[in-house]
Image 1 (tube, rainbow, N blue to C red):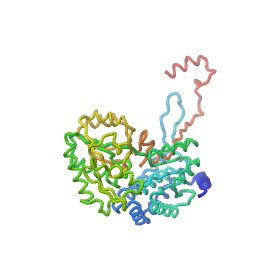
Image 2: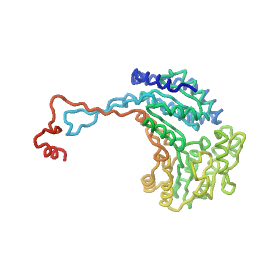
Image 3: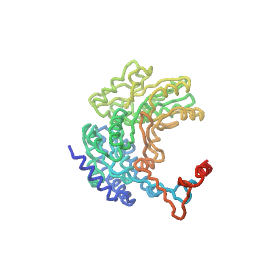
Length: 456
């Protein structure tokens, strides 16, 4: 096993050289990263095809393109974000100046998942670089081809004391978590997130946890049914459902359930063809373990559409389940695959109560034209973020912080939120020497009476 402690020491030494704190250094690093990604673009496309059977279109739109956009956004705004922020001074502090400095943490650890093995590794790394940190990146061992390309890309672009990729399995992650990094950014399951937080607590290391959960989708009776079905099919079955913000289940108003199911089936066929199993551009399940877990949810009595599998290629076609309730196995945990239970409801109040009785989800989607219903759902349910009349599209906006709440995570990133996540806000008060206010000193005559009058 590599000497991770030595790597950490090198990064700390490089950080204390103050080179990463230079704005020009950060911008140059982002430019070098973008150029390297362009150089490795075809290798990344091949790697994601090998690991997950992702098409070139899906790889570019969900992995590479979104990273290019994030780099450009950072470069355009980093100078403004880095400027010391002057804030107001209260009357009790007259004569002082108050300033907030955005300061990098130091050496940061980014642990990435397998479902979007390039984007979810590089996007937080961009934020860490933009904020002036050093980075150790641990990609997922479940997508080994992409992990290897990432290692090549980073090692060719940066010195290891600045940005380094460490490959390995669970033991490697455990060893890295023993090191007192200055910040940890983890994307993955809630169960592993608890372990990361427990380890971080030993060093009092701050963390961002991007987790998951059962993200609900609500389709009310006034929804644009055809468009709702299309957008739900796209959001759910992109990447074969292996997306942390994919709609995990749909609650559809009973009055439009039949129409919705018909439109949903039509949308799936339009997107993936009559036989998705044979669609060469349809994403595969990552490994046998996840494939077998998903296949165990396919009870023929509940399949309204789909259900075909290929255990050799690890493919499960887009599948819609009906007749499901919360006692069924498929509703116990996040599905994280191309299986969509559709439940029905009569009244929005009823499902608000149901959703609130379960752990807070990472995302929520509502299809309704009624502004009162929209506001009711947004204000009554706690969730990370989401969309009205769409699915998963919110995560691609650099202007919207992306993150969870409760069991679905803590902290946020994307755009300025990434810069803020990897920056400590250092507060400084600069005092004047031209005069001194006697109120704070204990030898002031009638001090208590005067201070009470001043502070009321």
